[in-house]
Amino acid sequence: MADPSPQSLSTPPPPPPPTLQSPSSEPPSSVFPLLKSLNRPKLRVTSEFDSESLLFFNKVSCKIFDNLAKLKLSFQNNTQREVSQPQLSLTSKYVSVLYDVEEKNTFVKSTVDVSPRLQLRALHNVKAQQGEIAMEANLAEPGYSLELSSPVPIGYPRATLKFPLGEVSVQEKEVEEEEKSKRIVSVNGILKRQAMNGLCSAVYTDEELRLRYAYKDEALSFIPTISLPSNAVSFAFKRRFSPSDKLSYWYNFDSNMWSAVYKRTYGKDYKFKAGYDSDVRLGWASLWVGDEDGKVKATPMKMKVQFMLQVPQDDIKTSVLMFRVKKRWDL
Image (cartoon, rainbow, N blue to C red):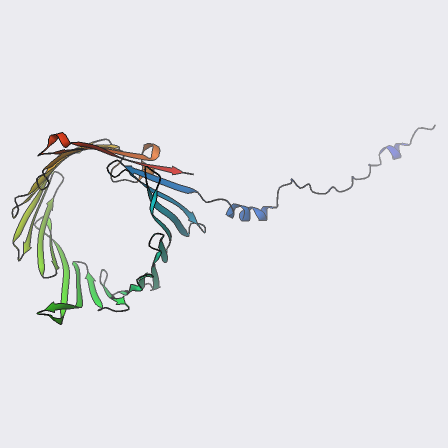
């Protein structure tokens, strides 16, 4: 047989036939956003146990619709696993819906910004067929607004003027006098103003005036209060000895009742408190593990624990040691 020519050796082989895409191949990139949106939302589970009531307070929540709304289920259960007070809520920026399973009732709350200076709000109790509508308008001057609200379907409207120093509300009310109904105009208000290195406030509600002065600096707080026309006088005193030590004292001149609380913190996650209340003749002490006022998610292990000892003055033998535990899981 003759040897092949150099030209035949240089001829490339024919290309392989096209192959079909296997079922296990990755989907096109345009499908990824759709698949991501179908992922299960992250669940947040919070459970709190109270040794005094022997109840668990549970909440399960998640954000849905690309974080536009929050769905939450809350309920209680005892040590026999009996569930009570289940409630389901859906919360968004403009609408909130709460459904009470046991009462078979729904509460709806809505807020709509009609314009940068005008806001509408509505509350509705479905079972009672009652609610409230309100309209608040920001006036031209900063810090000033006017709110008009009215119960639905029956009730008297209320007008509230808000300004930098406080607010004043005016509402018509119906009162009973000598077995007769009489309509009167009720005025309530709050005024606050800085004076004498402190804050003076006056609260007028239901024909009672409450005057309060609060002085506070880095080490000392002094808060006297008087109510008129009852002339009831009380004062609160707070002394901070160091950034981690604080003593609070309250005394009511009218009833001679008093209470005192000592607080000491150890870093951010430990707090000890002890006090006495003469009204109930009870001494107590508590220890917090985890920030008392902070959220559970910011504490170590996402858990807070409180131990409390209550000692009745009249019967020390009936002293009680209680505890509360709150834990959060992100699933």
